[in-house]
Image (cartoon, rainbow, N blue to C red; front, side):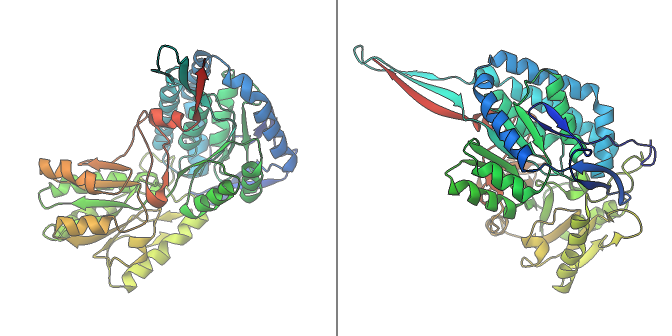
Length: 481
């Protein structure tokens, strides 16, 4: 398969069981980031569509909340199976619109289906409690109930997994959902919605919108129908949506940016850590909130690590996601591509070295070489602002207390990584890092059935595990005579 032969599907959005396409609404182009060519169009919802989605979510909430948890499980698991059955077509569309290697797209489909299965099984496990009281004092019960219709907002970097997590957790809890997915990667979200409707999800329980982000977010969040807001994306947009929600006393769940420190001590196998770092850094072209970005290397191993890591990065094969030789695809859009060079130039101007990459390729798609900046000052942009691309920056340390303080110094608090052969240090250090997730001697945070979330300006709440379903429940106390 190649980009020239792969077929991109027609895009529609879903409102109250009705699919609406470009023949009925104005549209925006969908671009292939590997070629910068227009491959399709995404229809844009109008005010009447948003209102219809709200009315449907409101109307269907009580019937869906009162649907047997086991019925909700069956629908969600059938949807997961449909994603697996359609994985080749979904992955093709994902690579076309996002640029990631086709194998990675297949993996995202499989991973999302597994997550949906895991979240589905939580539906029957939401227990209440009978509180002990005196013999003549009646009975006091605490129950968990679905909070109500949800407004969810999902980005383009994991265009199936992030919407899948949000929608599956909310549906498992008994909530109806309106999700605004990314206009850059609409086909992946459409595939999710089609799997759910084909699995038997009643009309109106889920609506999928594309359109003007400000118009949709302001209308949904201000509506009395919506009872909670879930957002994954940048810190700036997350703060804005939280402000809108706060004005109407509406709870939010935010999974925002990260700027993950990687602390590497002098007792490690340098080659092994460099190889581990390679795979994690180029995954999704660095466009991941958990991507390793700030490498704190013990002074005694810095130069040796940099030499090996740079060698590996220079060997990375970048190209079209359908080429089996490709290890890293393009950045997903023009905005991310344009953001890379200023970060590199700023670091070099402040005295950093350049060991690998440091440039893009303007001749075809949004390809930017994996980049390694060395001995970067702490005040450089790549050390203070999330790069969200294939850029890694190194600095040195000699003292554990010092490196912990520097790693914790930013407002980000999503993920961190520690590499050491000292078992005591491996137990101690994760507790000192002010982040939501820490991996020791490996990369990757979270799995299909575990907590996934951050602290500080990286947000609050969980996108994974049993905690994800709890996000969409509220407690009620019932006192009986």
